[in-house]
Image 1 (cartoon, helix red, strand yellow):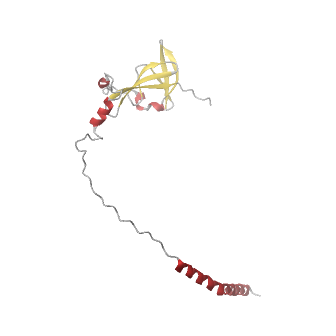
Image 2: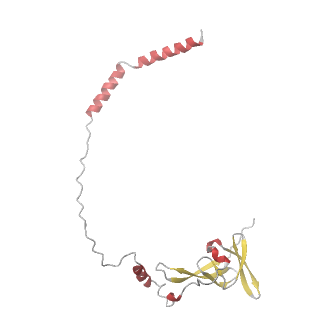
Image 3: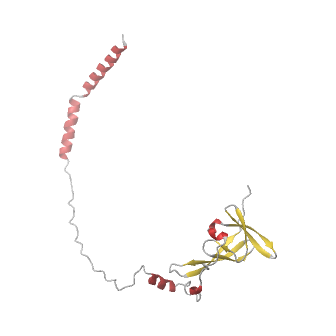
Length: 183
C-alpha cells in the first residue's frame, strides 16, 4: 500500500470519529446550558446618589504659614540646640582655602592607625586607597569638620552644619580606628 493511502485512511477515520461526537448528548448539553442562562437573573445594586460637595471658606489666612521660615525658626528656638548663647556666632570659614580631605564625605574615610611625630600624635586616614596624615587643626569631610583631638584609637572632629532654620550649629563627629582583616 502506498503511503498516501495510509494518510487518506487516517484522515477519513478522524472525520468519522469527529462526526460521532455530535448527537443527542451534545444537544441535551446545549439545551441545559440555555436553560441555565435563562434562569439566572442579574442582581445589580443601584448606585447611590452622589453626595453634594459644599465648599468651605478657608479661615486660616491670618495664621502663620506652616511652611514659612519664621515658623521653623520659632520651633527651633524652643529646642536645646538653638538655646546655645553662641549659636548665632557659629559660622564656617568660607573664605579659607579647602584642604584635600574636605572633598570626601566622612563615611568614606577610615582611620587605619596613628604615629607620633615630634611628640604629637598624627592619625593615618585612608581614602580611596591613599593614606593621609592628619593633625589637630586639619579639616576633614564635607561639613567643615575640624580635627580637635587625636588618640591612638580615634579622631574627634567638630563639624559645622546648618539646621532646618538655616542656623549654623556645631556637631561632634568621631572617626574610629578601623582594623583591616588580613588577606
